[in-house]
Length: 371
Image (tube, rainbow, N blue to C red; front, top):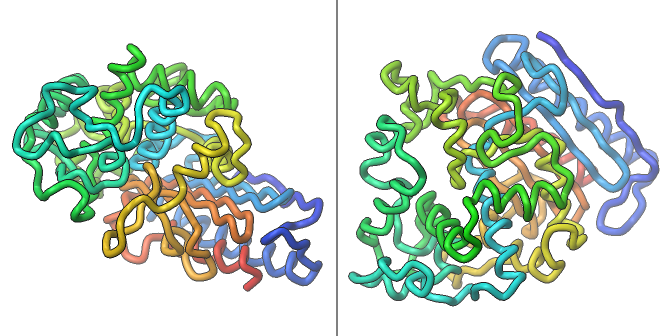
């Protein structure tokens, strides 16, 4: 087991706009070390092959890599964290006035009609209340045949809605795909290209791509596919040509789960929303994406983002935003403490309960809150 680290830099910790005293800083340092210890133990035992931890709060930065990850900049498959990045790329077109959140999807994809589809809006797609399923029925067949993204789009357009749009929450990877198809038709660019131009380049993210892009495929961390999610083949040897580690999946650049990135890059992405800096999106658009858009009684969601304290754990505020990924990833930012936390691992989320990423996240959340 190897471990690489950044020292804990602190030029004055900041939480909720107030400077923390030295005692609180010491508590925070101990908490971050405890979080790192969880991941270190998991990789040392062989439970996790590789992991990366990156935390920032004000001027404090704490980063470590574990196992086969030789650097905190090691590049992992982000899984569903991809949805937040792809949605940000879509919203770059919103910034340009190219679509409205309440536009019917059929305005941009005319063939998406019939059986209630005309009432599905862009907002519905981006908040998981569209009525579309998580995956199309032929997901495994499409992946096994190495189908392009266009084939998944075609299948999604034909897929029956499971409930009237806006009435229920149902997590939907295909809804995010359809939103990126709207962006492709508006911009004339594949989502991987649009994401690179609208998000990665403006934010200076050098260790990220929707798919592989300019990254060296040999540098990508391998996933522990034997514990994979059902939609990724669930470790079945017959799925080797299309599972998370396959050349097919890596290069497909699926906007619902195919982005690769490093922990510091994911943190810089979250900072665009935490600070509304305007580097990639207008500040008002960044703020729009991290507020709840769903009606009362329906699970709260931002645009592409999950919301709420459960993202980080005890100590996080209701304003916390971020996402998790089935490959064993978790990221969040809490405006109440100015904290960003990114934990990337190779152990799929469904492999063990509680997952080391979650235990580590809880330690960070508690430390960030001063506990």
